[in-house]
Structures are given as structure tokens and as C-alpha cells.
Image 1 (tube, rainbow, N blue to C red):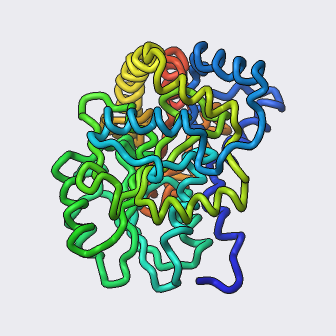
Image 2: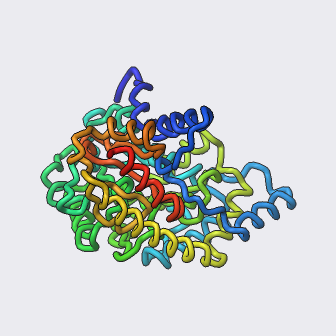
Length: 387
């Protein structure tokens, strides 16, 4: 591992919030900005979830709790995983984390121990993966995603890159930034490769409840997360709880033990009353989630249709999450040039694809966590600016 930790290497994961800061600065100067840069649902946290947190506060449930999480939430997650993934993990396989994003660091820190250890992931991908791997000083292997494969990570490409030093393969399906969803047979093939070559699958499933026309499938069904699969999921996206900072990991007990040590050493535990709210999110009515996904479907269809009417843009229909990833090469501008131009001239904040990796050049990411009216207005403003 790196003897001198490079904090600048973490900056690759901060690009999203830098764009947000620029957009907010323009707003403070009096400019109206339409926001498509941040992956944050615009719906409120469900009322019954907020009420559960209020009740916990009223009952003074505000002290330290076990680093692994409160028993009530871990029991609820046993049932949740059985319902959604098809197996019931032991309590010792479950860890509550302060958001799914920190779970990425805790997982990789617990598994990757040498600079020669290799981690395979996709390009483009969620920026935290590359930033954490840079920081840890291990060997990165980024596999370019292909638009002709609808941005799904190809198991053949994974196998081509496997060596004796491969320790982890990162999957993210449904995916940020492309909205792609891997097919069941593709997921199963990666799980087979993990058995054959003895590596760990880190499967980032934060959008597991957010699919449209294709069903979600997890590689964890094969080993029930007992041997070589780590599930990361959370409450931010499906339950509109981004600021609550609640996530969880389901993993082999030895990995959970290491991650739990990291949790107790760095943050002691995840805050107590938020965990009570998470129990209610899992066990209470799912009406908000269903209604929100109906709205997201309409938004998805609106933004894909709109982007495809802009000269120089072409956009595939995403199958999950709430991101559109249009190809903008025919505009003749780079991703950053166009994103900067749209922010300053069209009043539309989106992200250059290069924030998500070098293979994101030629693309932009739009988070359609906003209403159809804003989507249609943004398309109009982009057309006018480019004209």
C-alpha cells in the first residue's frame, strides 16, 4: 500500500459537488439554474419514516448503539434480504453504515491490503470507486463500457482482465451514471467467475428498488454473501433519505468483522434514531416508493425523448436509477466544454461524463430527479443555447 497517502487522489470523487457549487454561485448572482447534476430524489422522506424518527427522539433513543447497528434494524434487514435477494443472512453478516457511499471505502479497506492487489471496475462508474482505489494505492483495472452493449459491463471483458492478483470486482446494477441494468445471465456469469478465480464481488445495489422494464438481480443469491459477495445498499435513493446517511452491508462474517472495526474506530456507530426510522422504511407502507417510481418513469421517458430532439445528442433509454447518459460527440464539443457551456449559457446544470472516468468523454449525465416541466424547459433552453 502507499506509504504516503495521496489525499489529492480523493479529488476525483468530488467533481459532482464542484459542479453543484458552481451552479449555486450562479444562482446567488441572480441567474436561474435548472438542476440535473445531483443524484438526489426531489421527493420528501415518507411521512411515516419521519414520524418514526420523531418518536425515537421523544423516547430519548439518542445514545450510542452497537457499531454493527441496532438489533431491530438488522432483524428487519434479514427479512428484507430474504424477500428481495432470496436468502436470509445471519445477524453477523449485517452491518449498518453511515450511508452506502462510506460502505465502499470500508469494504475495500477491509479486503485490499497490498499495492499489488487488483480491483476491476467499469469506466465510466461512480467516482467514489476510483477515488478510494487511488487512495488505497492498489492496482486499478477499469473496463470501458460500450454504448453498443447499452453500457452493461460484459463478463467476457471481466474475465479477460482477471489475474492471480485480482481481489475484487465491483458491480453496480442498476448503474450510476448510465442507468444500465445488467441481465440475469451476465450477473450469474460474474458470480461463476468469482468462484473460479476466487475474488470478491462488491455489488453496489443502492438502486436495487429502482428499475423500469428489466428486473433487478443480485449475484449474492449464489453464495448467500457467505463466501465472496458483499452487498452494499441503503435508504438514500429509494426512500428519499439522502441526508439521513444510512446504508448497510451484507457480507461474509470475516469481512463484516473488519468493517465493523473500522466503523467503531472512525464513527463509533451510526446515529440511533435514524436507524429506528430505517426500520419503519423497510417494514412500513411502500406506497411512496411505488408512486415515486411511476413519476420517475414519466420523467425518464420525457428526458430521453427530449434529449434525442437536440441536434448532436443521442440518448439510450435507461433501465434503472434516474440518470440519462446522452452521447454528445456530434456537437463537436468535449464533455466538459459542453457541460460548462450549458451551465453558463443555457442555465442547465449537468455533469460531464469524464467525472465518471476517461471513457465518459463524449457523454453528459443528467439526473432527472426533477419534474417533467423542468425537463421540457431544460431541453428548450439547451436547444436555444446551441442554436
